[in-house]
Length: 326
Image (tube, rainbow, N blue to C red):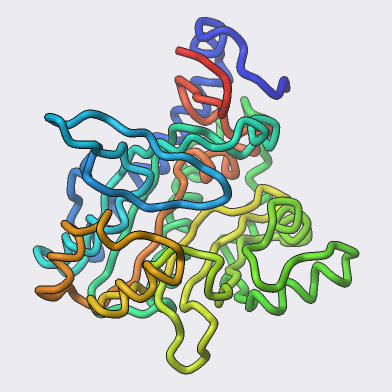
């Protein structure tokens, strides 16, 4: 498989693309059914706003003119999710996001400039609660694909037995510090104060036979919205879920900072100007619930379930970083 997509016509007309998109539809449908059965309410997410997730790893935001004001295309709906808990205790949305990733990420096979997330948020929940919901959601999606679409998996050459361990056993959970130590044993030097780099994620992922969580990332490696652990200062109550077989990260999540003063402090600690987030901070000043939640990259989950070489295969109209396309 080429690192870059073929022509739009060739991609859209491919039996392989049809199989991938049918499986993706099944994943989305299964996830919606699973969350609704748990009492979650689906909201329609905003596309633009006065501020958005500041992101990381060099990704840039997109500005739009909104009646003379500079608005942003959403890079994630995280602040809106927290505010939406004033309406319902458990919410989710299927959110489009745009992140202008560095052009050099076009060859990672795992980055898109435009993608979609299942965004989930739960009032009064902790990180462990959110991980439980995420694990059950992934298992429900995979189970329904293997049971209902074996012909499409066969078109893609994906063996359903690849998910035997995922469907039968709980997902392991290892701390960020343990992941750093494991990488050292594998000969990979990982900064203990930073996110696990992409090569490190792939190395850990290739060792696994089912997805696993990495928890407790160091403060400073993530955005202001991940809550610092009051019992372990310098560590965040957050997590990633990494797929098996080298497919890498599927999910990022955390308990949230919800106290107005703490949010402002964390913004300043991460180099953000609180003035950029005045609308969100006005809501937070009046009080938002404590919560935890996560976002699942739908195209990345589809890539893992389908066993695809590149994430661009998991969308009808791929936007590769740095590549101009339809």
